[in-house]
Length: 405
Ligand SMILES: *Cc1c(COP(=O)(O)O)cnc(C)c1O
Image (cartoon, rainbow, N blue to C red; front, side):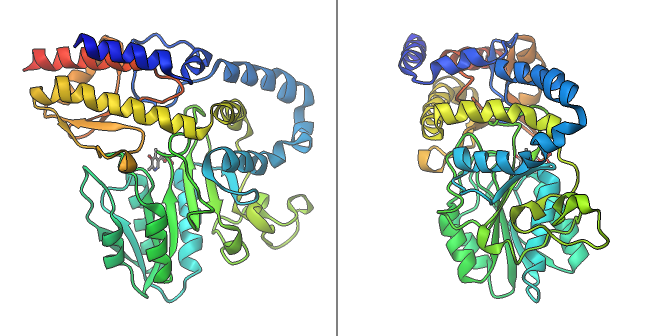
């Protein structure tokens, strides 16, 4: 027990990213373990928001649009692509929500493969992904081929190989599974899908800002993700969408708004898509909600995504060790990959009755994430979480679980 605490202290002392934790707005909690659901705000974000409201919005008023706001969806997209996604410029936009961008991209993809009637996806993907594709299938007369994934792991290339064929228009998976944290083999699954002539769409909500992504190198066709989890963008922060350069002339998204028009301010008669990635936009971009992203991308660029991933693996290794020492003997099951090569940024623990522990955990200042029916997700965001904080949080969980027994 004491050596587990000594290890946390030693890991914190050796942590090259430790100082970043001081840059966040102080939280009145003992242990915040829900960075995979809502990242914490930076002090710099609070300043930027105030500067934006008083300076840019308050002073420049409507001129702000021509001062640069109109370019933010693209310039922030390029920066995000460079800092976190392995995407060269001109392929990423910041816009909408994940759900809406997912609809736009998936519709564009299936419409670009006419004659192919099948979409391959998995039963354990995030609900919005499943629901959006159900809607598109109904709209376009497509059939959904569901791969049954084990909720403790995730999608395997062999399952994809068995599911795709010459009738498959699109495959859709999450890079990191929201439940188990399983890290999918993106390049291999892309290779298999492409061999069958299908397009690939990846949901990066649980990887952006946590796990290095190489969209260009991995041959990803389309991707979406949110900016409020490991990217600390704030509740309801806009999403991002990626569309590979080579597909931009071919794919057409269905929400033809004026901001995706070739010449928005000519207010002309018919819709003509803008060249390049701008055609992914629809209406007025959520500029106010994009302000935090400037601070967050500066921080991520400074820290480096590889260093973030290295700390993330040490954090989840440590979570696994604490779970094995303290929780598994109490009947808790680890339902996340132990292999670091297949593990994303969080660890899920399962035990009947976890739901009853939520209120006492919160009352004790420990904030994990809960997923029905009995899963507790431990998501220590690398830039804002210390090893000691993880130790404190899981020690309180252990004591409560012991009492419950
Ligand atoms: C968080 C999350 C979403 C959220 O979609 P919203 O439109 O932002 O509500 C979608 N997909 C995955 C995999 C997620 O983890």
